[in-house]
Length: 149
Image (cartoon, rainbow, N blue to C red; front, side):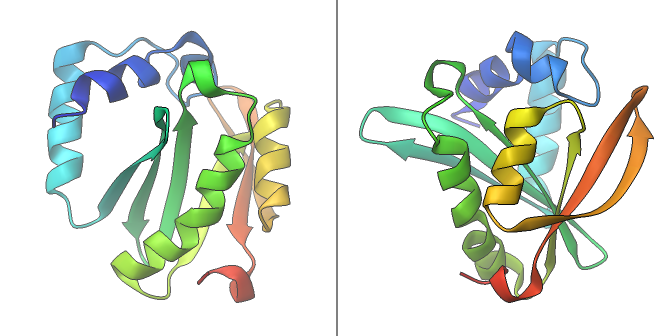
């Protein structure tokens, strides 16, 4: 909870909201309740990634039925430096340490070219598409032999 303000600021960044399944701004009280529930859940892991300059982003995994859905956000001031890919490459090992051998999945809007490139570069493959929030969403899963790094 010590990082609540930081996570709320990242979550409410205009680009982050635009790329989210619910683009509405998040009131701080709602964020606190959500974060408290996520931190108390055995089905969620949340990592804040830092480098020598400080926090650079967060990776979250939500587990359901043997599948961990990955989402991540890079601090607005740190985008475009390859940090998202670096964070995503660490995620399989962190998820594996938390829950063992589970499938990793992510959902990305089809018009989010930077995220699509990042997931593909990191070994995720397209397994499905569907519509959400009036737009096409591509579902990615990490290739089985690359899950535990």
